[in-house]
Image (cartoon, rainbow, N blue to C red; front, side):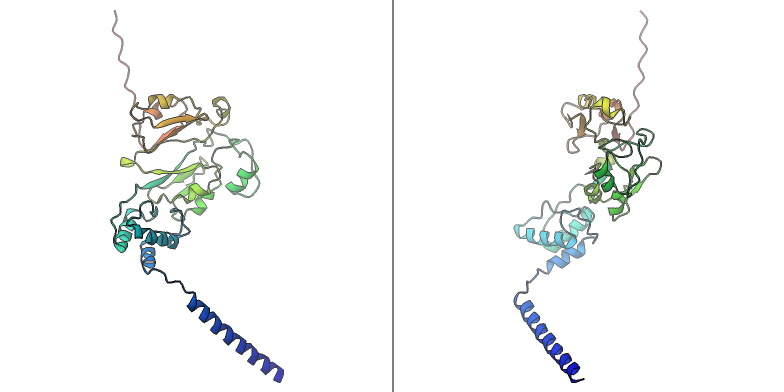
Length: 288
């Protein structure tokens, strides 16, 4: 019995000494944190989505407070919080901040089931990351959307869903914050975060394939074939379209959303968020 009592006493003494030592060490090496960091963190939505490029909202808050010493937090923003959060942060830090353009996710793949039929069946784990590592996908396109929903799982705002009829992700514009978590997760880089655009007008190429036209058309009827017709239609002063590796790309910073490229695309690979103007009927030729 005495052995047990002595053991308990010894353990108690050791625990007390350890607690004292830890307290003294913590006090000596304590790092004072700027109280504004917590205030800035409170201005953020708390989603910890990583869209800002930092490990969570607290990490972004630390970066903002540190940058505020230079008199500007330019380049630092919370996509999920948007202009409202940035305004509050500016008030906390005593800075005038300019809100960045609102962003939104777009799906750069038009390979629906009717335009890109399944050529194989994947019986492994229903994860895009797994399927992408094993083979080209059920549709046979090594660049297209796999449709297994990795992007849906990482979206903290419920802005993504998989359309069962098309097999492609659908972005809910009212919920999407443009945080970019889905774009980072997609193994095929099918999802891109682009500016919302003036009056919600966006034009983008719904394809990522870099195969030659004859090859890709055997797989998907909605693919970009790199013909360059879109680039020719783009106004000379704008020049928003480049074609490289048999794939067209529209620069959102230059695009004026005129829709001429989409109207000229033979495969309808260029997507718009607005209705294209109907072509004017040709006037009948006068009989001589």
